[in-house]
Image (cartoon, rainbow, N blue to C red):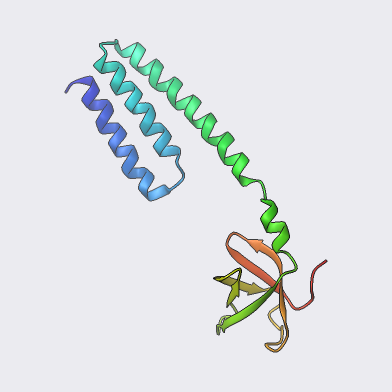
Length: 139
């Protein structure tokens, strides 16, 4: 088997693995393997192929980590959502709710499960895309 074929097969395998993880790290490693394959196609020896692949992987992982840290910061939009009133569309038996807010349906949970169904509900926090609701308007 030619070295470039090996690199491309490993890259394809990592892309398939990425489909199951969804973290983008396997995708970065797959792209690093493509660098190794291209270096093999250019006629570089194994040491050069491994070195370029390792460097591409290291810099790719560092870049992805920095990108994810920047995206993890709480957007200002979330802060403006706190204290806003929502309209309940559906009360489920397990205590979760579907609410209408900003023109869309959202999953929601009550801060305290003994909240009456008759009171107005306000957003107290967000956990992912789930709204945490309370009967008392937060400051």
